[in-house]
Length: 218
Image 1 (tube, helix red, strand yellow):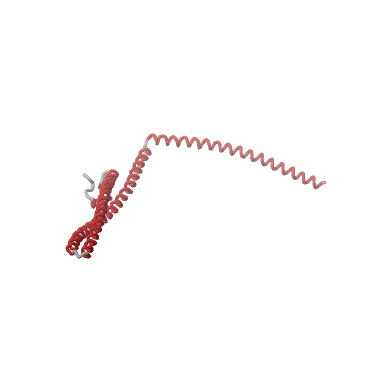
Image 2: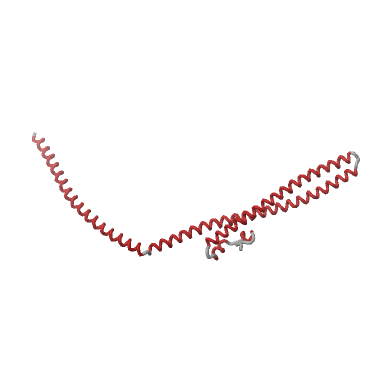
């Protein structure tokens, strides 16, 4: 059974309400969109037929107007030749054609009203379809995100991962200890190096001081 039975059902439907009641919102929104797309195709096809019918009536009315003008000219010609009987017959034909023209005009007015209504309904249906497609994207993303969270939580509570993390922590502590030992050795070497640098600087200053004394004594 179709989700919607008529175009008005779709236009007046509440998508949010439908999704709230659905056990599988993702599946429901796909069905709703499919129904809307199929209905939209049908409505547009019907609109195209109405437009074609209106064009046909318009061409028929134009042909009849030309015939009416032709009978008007014939009536005037007959009167100019004092053939009142022919002029009267011509006017009868003209009036009959004009009646048909008026009837066609009335039908075209109804077709215009139908087209206006169809155009409005198409716009409303397209808006509903756009809304449904946007909701579909949101539902799909939320479903994917939720599934990802489920997978992550499952992994977080996985015994193998917990065991591996404990091993990581053990090795990290061992590495921290080794690094501390290396830094301690570097600190000792650095202190010894600093003492030799200080001796070198002191010796250089002593030489410069001696040079100054010798220079002054001269």
